[in-house]
Image 1 (cartoon, rainbow, N blue to C red):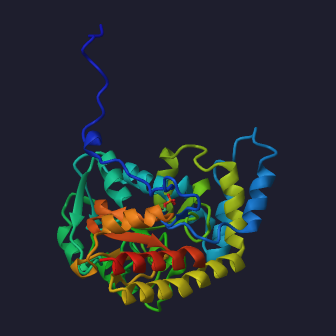
Image 2 (image 1 turned 120 degrees about the vertical axis):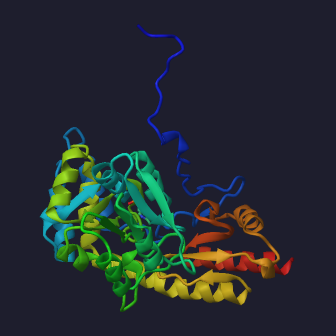
Image 3 (image 1 turned 45 degrees about the vertical axis):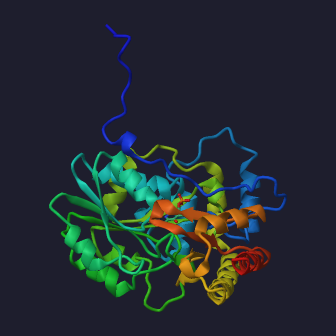
Length: 368
Ligand SMILES: *Cc1c(COP(=O)(O)O)cnc(C)c1O
């Protein structure tokens, strides 16, 4: 018997989640829009990936390979890994969620840091577990603070390295110190979405740490340097036991045929990636310098984006700057939800976009 008053109720926690808000795409009334809000590459994908995508379009009636063999083999070849330790997903977002579904039970705790990627908290709560947010120091993850937040209920720790939206990173020695302080039943997830961009001798994406341990996972994405955000492709490198467990609960065809083909072609085109990284290196330096010359504070970034702070000295708020830039077609990211109500995150764009933002901000700040 059904009562008219009864209705389906989401499980505990779901309605406490603040839904993820993606970067804006449009600037109303402006013809030429420069989207600098989601850390996409201004170079676009490899032409070889675009060709592979076109080739797939002639046989869409068949299911994709549920094990993504072609893609896993291409990743393994490029990174020198065993394909058996690789699991692909519909964006790394899917994999972050699957990790939570696989390892968190109600009442368990999942740790992330103060300015960490918002998807971690959403997925921890979605799995019925308790989100534990740990303070950072100077916009950087703090290993001691994370270790002191670990309890008997802790099952998973998410660390974006480098982190979005701060652009800061932990040197490999710090990541090792974090791992060394964890009980063996706590899974350390190193989200290396921006690792291709990092040019620091003391940085490692996490491959060695995964290879040497049973409780470390590294996630990567094709959405950033590879320019394939629209196809949704992520992968993780993990111990066999982790891959095995996740394979049991993932969707049987979680990666589509277009993603498998285009991803495999994209990762083999190293020249294209080198160009994207070189463009970024040039512009991350020029942008940081240019913004600081305007009197703005910029968090030093090793990624493909900068976090720009609008303090009292600037005389303008992040909201002022966002409105001013949007009117001129420059769409940046508000980062209030990340704990920065008075900052904007700007992805490194084309030379034209970057120069345009610098010129517009100069105009805005001179009006103050
Ligand atoms: C962009 C980003 C990702 C990638 O997500 P996809 O689902 O692969 O597009 C993962 N982690 C962080 C920190 C990011 O900024």
